[in-house]
Image (cartoon, rainbow, N blue to C red; front, side, top):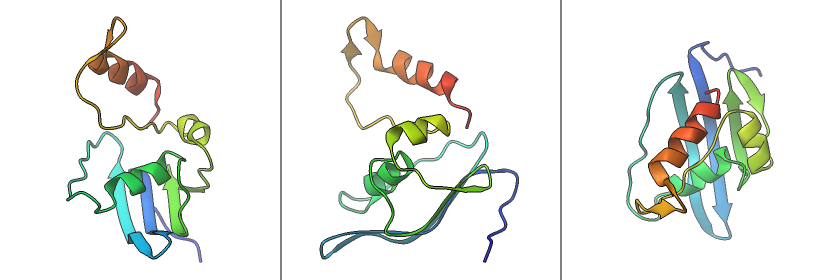
Length: 116
């Protein structure tokens, strides 16, 4: 069965589940992000935020569920796949400098190359 997705939805996760051994990290997660929307995921340590983002960025793969980018189902098998789809992940870091470049500058540079 095909899922209908609004043209304003940039990223949609539908029924995303990820299990590590006996630990269910994500259980049937549904998420929609519209174009131009800024979204924050908040939760306690161990609540599955990073696991979900790792699936969107190609580090992990969902055990169940689907990911849609710009309305099309996508299999994100690697970080390179994610980048080619215009998705990137900036991991939790303290604000610091990397060489001569401030983290904020690096993030802005990345955001300017993404299409979503």
